[in-house]
Length: 106
Image 1 (cartoon, rainbow, N blue to C red):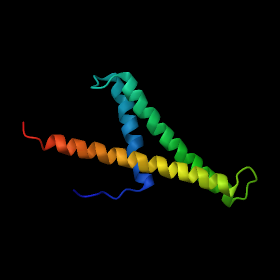
Image 2 (spheres, helix red, strand yellow):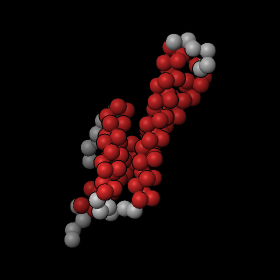
Image 3 (cartoon, helix red, strand yellow):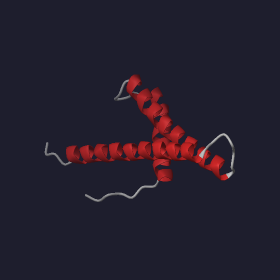
Image 4 (cartoon, rainbow, N blue to C red):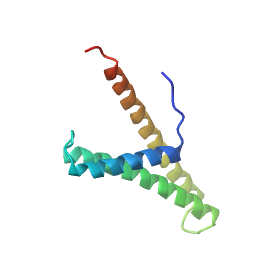
């Protein structure tokens, strides 16, 4: 099994594309109910928001804005990093499960 290298930017782009496709597919027949689609989209939006908050905190510290301390920036960056790592692990487990199912004899 090969492990794909993935960056935060490419992960966010992929997740954003998936969220867009999921929201477009609401007009068509879905395999999942609305609640699951919305939970997936909400999770991706929260992940994206945590990345944006961390980036803004870094910019604020670099610009020496008084409303953000270095400790706050480090905390927000750590939270965003943990969120991204969790999303990547979930994605990897889903791919592993899909591969396992697709390799099963019928």
